[in-house]
Length: 146
Image (cartoon, rainbow, N blue to C red):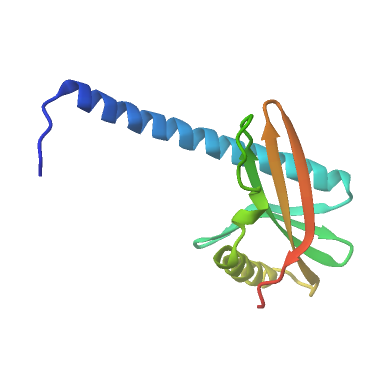
C-alpha cells in the first residue's frame, strides 16, 4: 500500500469524497422529488396510490397504484437536463434486468393483496430543466413475464 504525504493530494481526495456525497444527496433528493411529482400527477388522473417505495428484501417498487380493476406498478425515472447537453432519456434506464426485478417485486406485492387484479407496468420519466420539469407517462411500457 502506498502512502501519500502530500497534503494537497489528501485534501483533494477528501474534497472529492465530500463532493461525491453531495452529488449522491442531490441525486437522491431529485429522485424523491420526481416520485412526489409523479404521485401528485397520478392522483390528478384518478389513480389511487396504494404504496410508495414499497420494499420486500432487496426489491423495491417506486409507486404502486390502482385504477379501476388494474394494479399499476410505476417506475419513476428523473433526470436533470443541462443546457446544450443532450442526456439519455430517463425511461431508457429501465432495461431488461430492471424490468425483471420489477416483475419479481410485483409478484411479491400481489401476494399481499386479497383480490386478483389486472397488472400493468408503467414508466414515468421526468426531465428537469432548471426549476421546470416535463413528465412523460408511458402506460403498459413492458411486461417482464411473471
